[in-house]
Amino acid sequence: MSILAVNKKLIVVAKGLHLDVFDGSDHNVVHITPKGKPQAGDYIVDVIISTDSKYVAIITALSKELILFDLPLSSRTRNFELPRSASKIRCSPDNSKILVADKSGDALEYDINSEVQSSNKILGHLSLLLDILQTNDKKYIITTDRDEKIKVSCYPNTYNIQTYCLGHKEFVNHIELLPHNDTYLLSTSGDGMIKIWNYVNGAICHTIETNKDVNDDQLKLQFIKSMDDDGIQVSALPVVHCAVAQLSDTASLVAVTIHTLNEILIYTVHHENERFVHKLKEKLTLEKFPTAIQFENSMLYVYDEHKCSVRVYRVSTDDAVAFDAEIKMFKELSDDVVANEANNSIKVLYKRKFDNVQEYQERKKLRLEKT
Image (cartoon, rainbow, N blue to C red; front, side):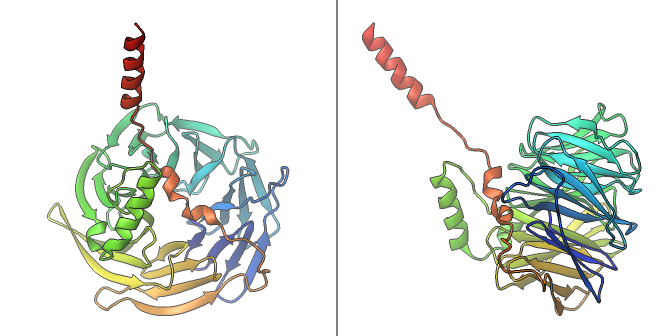
């Protein structure tokens, strides 16, 4: 999920139930009014811009709606009621459909050109879905869940499972096709790993251990201790945000944030002679942990929801990452609009492990003593 979306023409950010659509000169702030009964504390979960720049789509958390705004931004909207809360939305490659990953484990498809405003369930998981995408050739739907799995399903006959990409040890929260070669898939996880896959056969091609590039050992220990206090065993800081961009014909940029670390780790991933090599290009230090990050070509956009600003950085092939501009968003919005704290809820994605063997042994011992 991301409440920042960018393309060549627009920057779109969300705060609470508000959208700010900035076209480079003017801000157009829209207050979202769900059709159903208003829910206190409702907020926007995810924002996307279609690749043809014809519409902006959002999903809401509590009112459970998928809402489309035509571009250039007008009063015309299309509302679709979601059966359950959703985690992520994506456009199909031809922008004719919206793919929805919901929290019950279902992947849904909405035809935005159809008069019938109903969903088509295309596949399901037995766990909370966290991300979804369709490959550029439209042959596969790829989904990820809380149970460490990446599922590759054939499309449109999604009952045919092509393969599973297995190797992460925690929830898989982001997937992207590698920009310079879309026959490979990139994923990030709560285990702190970035992995690159051949998604057709499920083979792992490369792994980046991001925690090796985190120099703050105290930060790791604090996180491990806080999770242990909640009965959750972890060994690494999770990846929270991920953004990718093409750097050259043989290389891509990968930017990630690590939980509570006020830095963005920017990697280059090169692919030559059937092997991948990565390099840490830059550690971009920030004042505070970002709300969302996105690439648009070589420009990295960093959204701070509390300050209502987007900072833009230029990432070139040879030079260091350079600050380019800061754009103030929601200038006319009152300060009483609460920021979306749901972005800090990554801890709930970890599964708690229960050891009831000792309790069983004590009950058994009491039972034997009675007999």
